[in-house]
Amino acid sequence: MNVVLQPLLHCSPFYNLIKGLARYIQHIPDTKIPLTRALFVTVFLETTSLFAVPRIIFFNEFDEEKILSSSATGRGKSKSLKRSKNVDAFEPTYIYDVLSSMKHVDSVKGRQEDAEEFLGFLLDGLHEELLLAQQSQDEVSRPTSPSSVADASEWIEVGTKKSAQTRKTEIRASPVTEIFGGSIRSVLKAPGDKDSIKIEPFMTLQLDIEPEAIVSIEDALQNLAVPETITGYTSETLKTKVDASKQINFDRFPAVLILHLKRFRFDSVSGMARKIRKHVSFGLTLRIHPNIVAQHARKRAQQLEYRLFAVVNHHSLVAEVGHYTCDVMRANEEWLRVDDESIDTVDAADVVRERGDCQPYMLFYAKV
Image 1 (cartoon, rainbow, N blue to C red):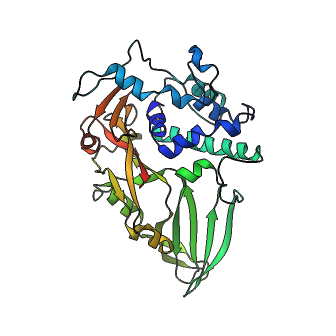
Image 2 (spheres, rainbow, N blue to C red):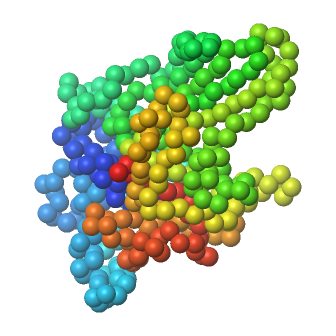
Image 3 (cartoon, one colour):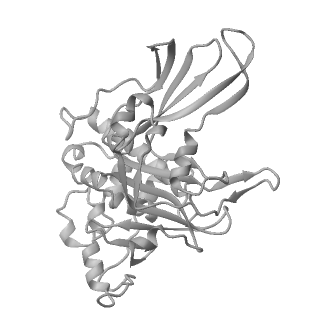
């Protein structure tokens, strides 16, 4: 849980969102937004100065300046910021309580959890709850794009050669999707048929890193856009099997791009999951190449650049067990390495270098 909350804590747009939440959800019953309350309510109510503070104050509990100043080991040296008598680690037990009450979430306190799945649950849950919050208020703290139905809609796109049938899975806009929400565009071409276009939203982008040719994040993004041949596809018009092609491009990029490196694969021989431990290089900045962007969005993407602000690492030789740590960049551009209760400063070069004890599992980039 810690390695998921830390990147969110150091994500400026998300941090600013949370700071502004209290003023328009304070009158909403806890039963309608239990996850929102659980994530950001203080767990240290015994501190008397906190009693008068609004309940949405989880982010205030992690006071980096206080930790760094009280635990520094010396000027110019790495700081080992383990728990001291002045600064205690705290456990967000409220989140566990909410998880245990939700039947559709298989999460148990103390058990190894998948960090990407947990992040997905948090973002999806917050998205749904903030939609409820918006519906409960006459005014919201920030404008959102026009809402739409949650199911898929269809329409016809007319191009220069032939029309195309487009299916778009839309979700209602919330402050969460405004930060993390992007979309990909999948085009299926078959002889005799109209092009079938499907647009799907995402908040974490899944990247296949297993192919041998993929050695960098840029390679993985390029691989996502490589056309795929589908043999034996049945043409609706010709009523016979043909060779079709499918290609994925980016339709819209989010303000914060979360990349999930798919390191766990099911091995049909052993019947068990295995971990892909290969090194995949990544940088402190990420430029988006126009050829992975849908044609209509390429002009806007020409100058698109992201900056790394968090990395979640997985420590283990195997998939079944392991330990997560994370590296996060502070507002002053200093990097911290967080391992449970221990926090150390680390050079930016060390964040992106290949390490033998762990592999990057999730990368968090913000638009420049």
